Image 1 (cartoon, rainbow, N blue to C red):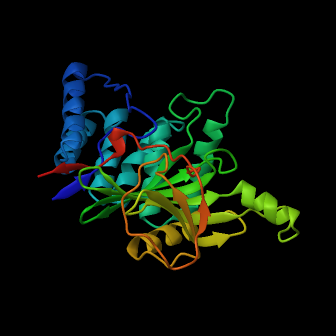
Image 2: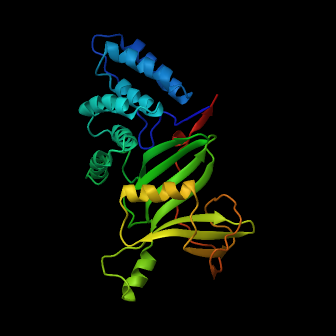
Image 3: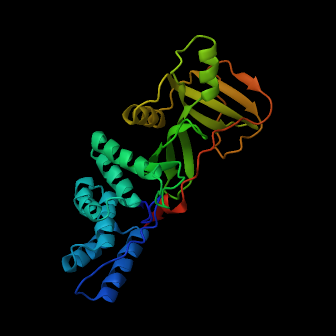
Length: 303
């Protein structure tokens, strides 16, 4: 059983034009569409063979370069993915999907410094005077995809944690059918920050970040569990460690807040936690709104 992401990227439709000077353009375009369909069917190895056959006829075929990189990512070969994606970005340096897939490849190789450089480029495009439509106004991008025997974990990186929904990072634990099993977030809490600064407990430039999770209880309530806290935005590597450790083994909460009624977001059911004395609150909790991943980024089950 394999679990794969579909070919369409989060931030772009990958509708890249194929230029095939001197070749049979219609035939090559048809082969390219065949390769994309194979990826969507969960057959990245077969898709890769199609894209590579196109590149033998036209080594500058942009769509096949990028998708060959993506197919290698799905096959767990990030170094090979970069070999294609570097060639693609030399032709299309500001293409959003090419940047995102390259970041994912560097992250899979553990080369966070290189990933950060490309993230800065991505953020620069987002904040430019004429941002590409694929990234204009977007809150986040999928920085890392981690395969598991029963599904996939996607860690997302947010561009502006200082603005709503005040998230720096989130991790979606997805089952093979795409169902969300858990969602954890590294959340900037501006209200707690202001309160602590006003009380003289923090310096003026400090910011309070929580590793937290909202869960529906076995009754009709919701719990906010806080597992860790920091007084500045954690780096990606630190936050990644927090998230993956909490997914592997749920830590003892340092704080629990209980609410009456269901939260506005959908959370998996779980038994109530009684590890610490909760602070009660009437009404519905203000759950940080985490944008859903599009269907194209959810893993699809394949035989």
